[in-house]
Image (cartoon, rainbow over all chains, first blue to last red; front, side, top):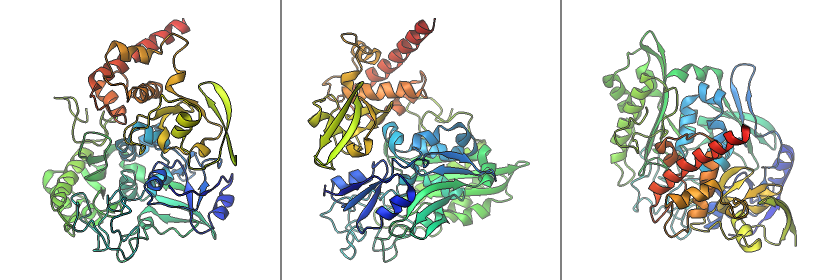
Length: 352
Length: 165
């Protein structure tokens, strides 16, 4: 790990000012950043520790019925907040399907949005990686790439965004509040993460010094609370990133789908909203055939970036199953294995 | 020493000076405070052997920057027994053979104490397994670990009822 200056501001404006110095990085819990620093992928000259800033760890109900979540709220605290879990159950399920209990106790909401990719070549300073070292090439393209992107990738980068949390958030039109050198602004979460194109080193719409201070969920996103699920296929039962995942949310009216929300994880450099699939579901009665049609629409533009064509059909099936689970209704209590298609107890229903 | 933080470690408040900002909480405990119960397994947050409680919550101390935890309360495996009396989770790990080589055990026990404090798993073995998935045991003592968590949780609840009575 390189050494660094350490500063600990006590206000947001002080933090933004401190991070104006080139080579600065914000430190929240550090569960991703310290890991990247240990392997030499992240080499900040200055760490601006924001964990001692008061007021960024609140969950507030807004006058319009929406929910504002401070950037320093810990994953576990948000997932177990009863009001939040009742209003946005698929987001709670996604949070609890991610990482381990220790990491969820530490990791922050803001940090989760800004997780770096888990591509092994990005993580290895001796491999070619256009994201880490622009212009150096991409060793993943002809390497171990079965878990890489099938949507939105470019020959310069085929890494996927690792967050579970972001998948239902993007389906529910979440917004991000950003404090920067020119004051506060907000953007949709969909606009935060960028596809690689020719500039994979640019992962987000944030400018140098920008600090995410809060996340907002609109009140209207709670209309899906009765029919919202997150489903995540992993290579082991627990504590693994998604091979593919899907968040499905339905607003039901008289047995038909009034409106649908659908997003995919593990398939692209950003959480992937499937708007055409959503539109194909509106007004329909839930059923295997229309779910399959939606899944075809969601993956219509998918193409393998390597040895990962299987992920396209897998993603379709996860979409169908997530929609079926959502149509069946949000369970009163989250399953023992949140987001899992499996149960670790033989014979037990995974979502009983 | 350019850096100084205050930590309450196993109930004792300490001011700790050090000269390198890169020190993790795990390295601080092991190398500076001689508390070697928390283990450095992977040093990447993947194995859970470094688990300690910070302000009552279990975290991976290998992924925690010591400087950032100024003012925190830290509980390590060295601080859970009351003199010669083992913590109920320690006793239950022995009773159920919840270990073989013992390397992961301090982390397992601290994680189990954190799990019981959190109170989300109940007595359901599937929820306990899921809630303990951040602690790897290469000897695969998992069956004994789940039984130990269930038993310890009952013992702690009973002790709580006795105290309340």
